[in-house]
Length: 385
Image 1 (spheres, rainbow, N blue to C red):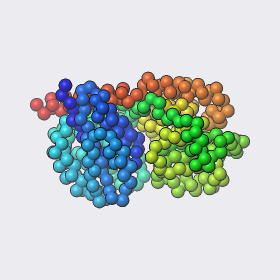
Image 2 (cartoon, one colour):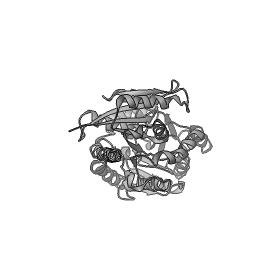
Image 3 (tube, rainbow, N blue to C red):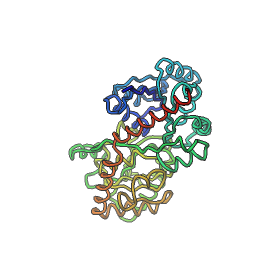
Image 4 (cartoon, one colour):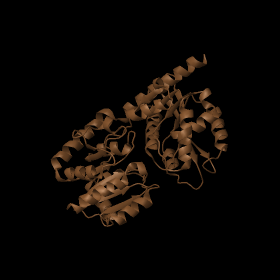
């Protein structure tokens, strides 16, 4: 059977959710785990002053990786570099991840010679650059052969922006079965390195330190939890991002210095789930969050806000405790309930893990993506003939 040549374009310095999913699919493709076969190549923007975590991780996957050097945020020479790479590789499908890649791909014109599958992961608004790209995304995505997004709310948003509904596909993220397994010795060693005593119960949040993740709401809820007598609870914040100064200031103002640990950027969050008693997603906006699937796979009971694709993945009081966003009191009550009711916590964690094993496997996601590539390619060929 003829293989499908795919060139994926991404802007990633660390191992973000989109980066994890891309590398996961690339591993499946390189091992021959797709039908029809997929020949994958990855192009990643890179500046000399930025971390190389993604490039290092991508180099461990047996697919070709092409760094696209750029000198700054708006370096127009990358358009020519991308176009030249496309002419050299001659892919059947080009895929782009997030707004910058969408815009630059359309600028190259590669979508006129290959089917274009654009992966929409939602919008954040950290700075002027992101706001500009977000606005330009309306222009970019309207001509993509297919747009893959991760939740119904994101799909509705895309339709409002003028993306034809018939071209939008919803594909939730996936995670490897058995992810997050840790031995007692590994967990004890990690607690020791972090200075968290064995008797403390750990509430874990994993994700980029950005405003839409709701860290400040979680801190207020955790403060109330501690004030109510849960002084053996410890909040562990894993991740890095622009909200760090505001989070650190809130920790000081709330007097939580001894009860909160911030790890900064880590190569993988996997070991931290091994010491967690509760995992929290306090977000105001989400798609199909990898942190949610990670907690589910690691059998850690979950408190999550009812935003984005979260209610499409877990159900309140069946597989998680789902609370309204922007509600520190609700977060506090849910965390208190899971810490105080071990039977409920175990039942929710077990059901959530079963959902991962049946609905969110990498193999299932790979099949969906290959079908989308094939459909986009067939549409491109009909249009060209």
